[in-house]
Length: 312
Image (cartoon, rainbow, N blue to C red; front, side, top):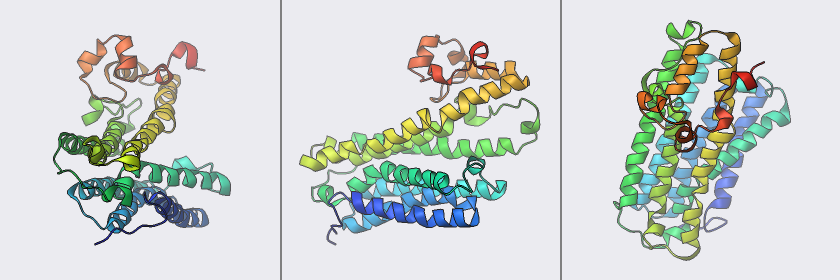
């Protein structure tokens, strides 16, 4: 098979156009019928669609391309399936209560989702593009490949298992008790093990995709493009750490518990013993100096709730 050139030699334009069209299609359904059940499904399956199309257009099926494409497909399919199952059970998504009837506010979310999918897909998109596949690929199995495969496996276990653990906890009798804390399974060693897994997955896929550049098989613009595709993993990391993930859950969640006055001492102990993101032993983390928690374990002051400063 021969490589198909479409719009540009890195497949950036075609993948962006596909993402825009795919998300607008589901946006019309969601806005027209006030239907929350397709929103996250559209995001996860978009990754699968882009990986399949770019791999098919590439005309070459090197082991590295297949592995990287398959990994992002597995991740996207698992994520969309779980979120679809969860929304079918809950019935609606509370995130859109103030946007569902407002055209431009609701559309803004979908535009952001387009950019999220396109950006996070960059390592696979560029790896499958004509400007990279024209170079000879190194044998799959180098150190970065092995690290990437191991990292992906660990990330998938953390993300998928913790999603199930949290879902089961929320639907348990224990969760109905005032001040209940989700400290089951992976939540014993990380307050957000699903985020840790998701970040690890994306950096692992990047490591696999960038091997031809790091091994000096790929030269010129393709070399720089592969390294630049790290933007996808960093975009997702910054999104979870500073925009829509931890900032919306950490301090606001602690503030809510404190002001309700139910189970706050127990929750404060949980915060003290459990890392915010990177898994670690609770007994050791509890004795760790604050400086190390703020630097090595990324528990930045913006996440910390101080009753004297932040409570009403």
